[in-house]
Image 1 (cartoon, rainbow, N blue to C red):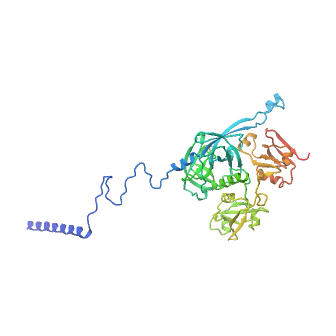
Image 2 (image 1 turned 90 degrees about the vertical axis):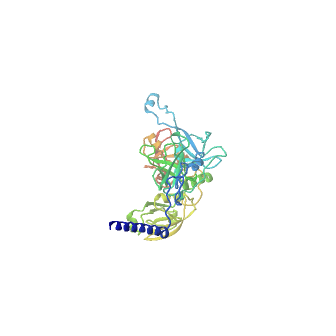
Image 3 (image 1 turned 180 degrees about the vertical axis):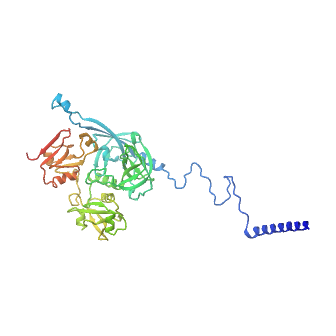
Length: 482
């Protein structure tokens, strides 16, 4: 009996297995393919070949083209300057008042970017501002003496020219289309190391670092994490197409060397300044005619704004473009020509692209309602005329001023003042002042910017006393009319 049951169980098992096999092969389908372990033979239609060492991974950026386009258009800028030194009281004691300290020769270096085949070169104003002699060395080791075509302290841009032809040069890109997170290359000459290329991403845009001490300063830096060091100033910031999107200008560092963030002047500003210098010999500064501040959460709530963005008008300048367009104090500017205005730097950049006489469309909030108005920008004199060479916006009584460099402040142990950079006919020349003279006070008021000189003279209507230092370091205090 046991054998009979055992035979029956075995028969049932065999029969069940046969039925299962029949159902699987006929009803469910064919067996799945075998996955080969040999990577040279892969049967699966969704499998991909292994990445070889010389292939670019998906999303990886190739910088070689941009670097090759850029290094030949970036130059090394070497400057030599003779700086007057204050007289030494100890030496004067022994040798008399006729003793004069001899000028001291100093040298410096930076970078520049060739923008035309006939030798126009952009660099930073702070690289060449005190230079008596400027030499440029190309990537092929040729050297040229450079001349200053023009410079603009308010944007820290200077234009040089060398006598050469058929040079490699960079074309302008579009810095306004540059996005945060986008790759960029910085090319320059840090520590006198020529043709150095570093890469990074755009970390932020529209940074205002308050580095330029001028009433008409325009600061809207592109922030990157590409490594910059001393000597990179005036070099190129390019996109992955090798197009110029900025001029490298500054680093944020507690030590003076690169520590994470670097800054470049956007080409939207650079291009306009350079074009003005080449065409007019002078930057055509457009002004909207307001004093402003960034919107606070309290102001945004009061004006029923959906975000804490925009520029609050704190004062309307009499006779300026904003007054003519009927803008008012406490209006909030949110857009200009359709571009969002989130910060002071944004409006400086947008206005800085234009010349006097240009018309811009301004979106603003007033009493919780958005409005749009056309604004015709003006120059410092309140009109739309072209400013001729030598008649810059900072010219007062025939003299043109700029804020002191850090070197000047250390040299004279002062923390304020302005320096005469051009001197034409006028009261300052009649007083016996010379180019290079430093003014500390005008009519008894301390001056730290050209605009403060203008204010102290009541817009060129009053000049009684001035105090400062002559180029040789001699202190003076003059009363006009004595």
